[in-house]
Length: 245
Image (cartoon, rainbow, N blue to C red):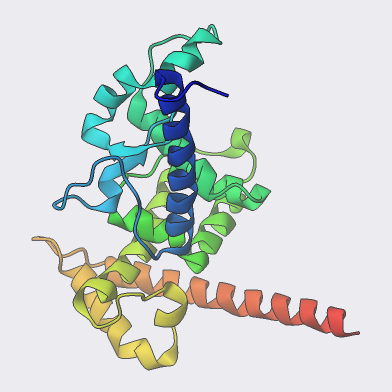
């Protein structure tokens, strides 16, 4: 037992709290609903402005994470037990920790994790991480690249851009319509056809110089996603039929 009111006891209890909050935050990010628990909340900041400390797992503002890391007790304990260089990039280490925690179940999730580690941290990335159909499309595109030896320089960039476009398709209805919990699965239903047309128009003209190929790109993406959803449904139905036999 650690002595009461001792610094060591206080540190250990705080680390236990941080681990519990970290698990809660990962669940929120995975399911796309709820609120994350942070070390110090700022009312003007969004969830995408925070990431976890790579040592104590407390969520901090990215802009001040370097300061927290400098005095983090868990970091000091870590470097007492390892010969690793003390020169670290706090935000990069935290982002890698969070991404791998959200996608830690299967080899397919490893592909999504690899993609998201290089994606800009913002609200679009948060949507991508929590949307099952977008993640499935990302997995299919990453798997289609083949081995690393066969990859071209900008292959992952194209996959990232396609994935972010799907994320923006979901983001717009959440912000501009009465569908705060919209997902790509719900938006590609026939009843939302007119809404998808409006979304495509807004994405087409959201810059000073309209990108005329955006509409075509969105159409191709939604066609592939719809086929992916259909194939997934067939696979699930086949699995259920085998269980019933």
